[in-house]
Length: 386
Image 1: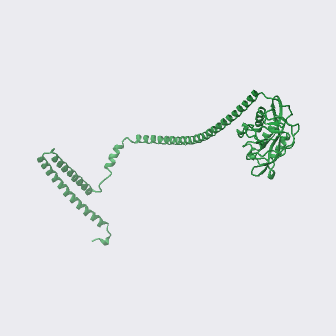
Image 2: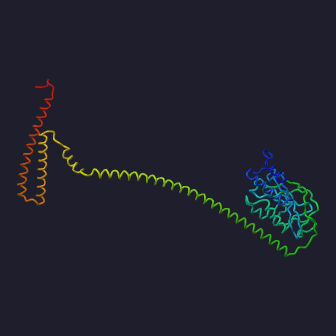
Image 3: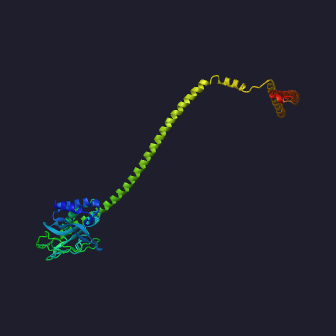
């Protein structure tokens, strides 16, 4: 309950006293620390001043206390502090062991360097946002440190079982070599390793423990590589899915347009079909007797104005007909189908008839002109009459 109240108050602050975490992850940070405090009551959430390598200082959250381990059938408590840097939880936390003055860090430990920074933990190297969290990290460290404890008492060599003094004094935390380094900080007293007499370990047990630690490290590394590969596949598949969705929308839009155009064409076809039926019915109804009416109308389309005009039209038609007949006889003589003596007799008769028709046409034309002059004189005013 205290952890929840403290974190809710600390993360809700605004202004100069606000913690430097992104707003969208503050609730996730609170849940991580609350879950850690619930499973590991010896780790207490706090806010403290943290100094970076470049000299910048910032108030950050930390989980300060001890991490319990089980070694050789006994339970020990390793003093530790888990700092939450600015980009947390997108970046892993910084874990430091804070041994008392009666403790030593095991040389060449695979997970902890000489400054106390836990840099080789597989869970930290394979940290993946947002699935990774502080609770699983603490459990992983507890398991790994149980296999190979990183702290030993000054009164015993590095190989025996870890031990600690009965009380803890304030000690400064080491300055880490990473981007986020801590300012010397004095941690309050907390439960420490219970003093135990040194014992000799079985080499087979040490080999088994180291082999298990190596297997765990390899498993974490493989899991991290597999997770990264799967994440890349998910990103690629998500891109393909988005592209397919875009293409599906384009296809659906095209299908809708084609469907609308097809419906419009079908309606137009129905209108044209109905109009065709109406026209065909009208043609069938009016086709009977249409040819006779057309012939009679063609004959009566042009009528002469008077007798002279009719006589003039007849003479012109006869002249043209005789001209065509003479032309046909000329073609027949040239082709040899008409004998030459018959050609002469026919041409003589046709030419005589054509001459009479042309003389008559000339007389009719003269009479028609005189009649037209007489009509014009009759329509003239009296003062112009002779």
